[in-house]
Amino acid sequence: MSSEQTVTGESPDPSTADEGLLRFSVLYPSRDGWETVLVGGVMILFLWLIIPLFIAAGYFLRLTRAAGRGDVEPPAFDDWWGLLVDGVKLVLVLLPATIVYALAIFLAAEVHDALAFLVALAGFYVYPSIYMNYSVTDDWKTAYNPSILIEQLTTTTYLYGFLLYVLVINGIGGIVAILLLGASLLTIVGWIIIWPMIYFYWYGMDAALWGRVYIRLETT
Image 1: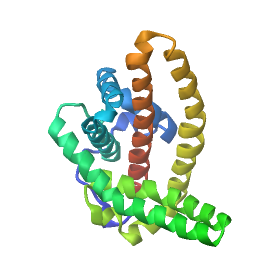
Image 2 (image 1 turned 45 degrees about the vertical axis):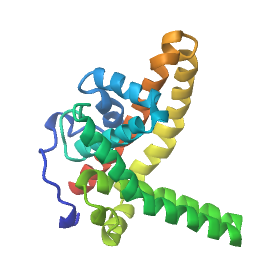
Image 3 (image 1 turned 60 degrees about the horizontal axis):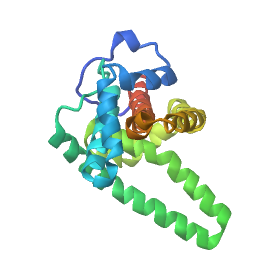
Image 4 (image 1 turned 45 degrees about the horizontal axis):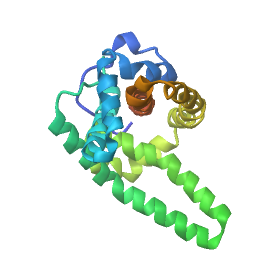
């Protein structure tokens, strides 16, 4: 991969070097125990207060970064101000892509619905690449670098990660999550904390997946 993407960090954890993308993504968010998942569930529970929303976004960014840099364990909730700042920065960095994406779909829909669908699909394929590049490198220029994006998007590694993201984690995983959510809501404890923890872990798997995809792209 391009030297522009080289990131200073720990060497990839040898104990997880042979783990597939899916296994790593499923296990990584809880590798430091379930306390972090519990705290993350509280953040999800109070997303409507806005600040927890940005803190959660900052945490997922750091989770992707940790996975992308080969850290043995995911980050902890121990730098609240930093997490808040990271979350705000992430939203600001992704905002241009979000606006262009929405505008492109709108304009395409004016021509034909089929064209709008193709534009939406293309944008959906590109968006995770922008996210993971910024999350790992902390550099918005790298996130939007056309040569880096094209190089990544045309690899089988990225395509495989994208298919896992869509079909398994957010497809099959979504069905499992909905069933667990339904069961959790039958209890008071479920209403208060279990369903937010499920949501947090679900998003954590997405974040871990893209960090793992990044490190695979860097080492192949």
